[in-house]
Image (cartoon, rainbow, N blue to C red; front, side, top):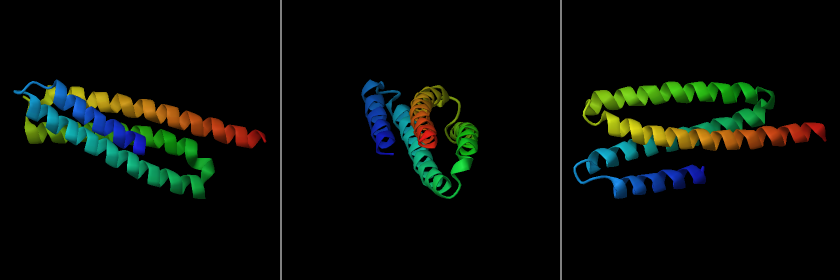
Length: 126
């Protein structure tokens, strides 16, 4: 979880450095919304994962699949909410920043769940 928090902070900082002065407020709000969304999602997912792993370890593959689907639907809902709140003019900037955060989160989850899956398979073989 700390890794995602650091990545979100770094992405926000880089976004503010790269952004033009005319687009900077849009980029800052885009990175803030994206960072907040993904941080809250990862923390919530971590807490739920811990509970599922402790109480029902045989349900972890189903949990991983459900998490991926839920993340996609929730991301679409956030993009729709941003579009409704901020309008069409700032949507391209938001989408690009949000997509970058989404790709980083996908990479993080792929690595994390692959390690967890390999670890649990090696525990079963012992």
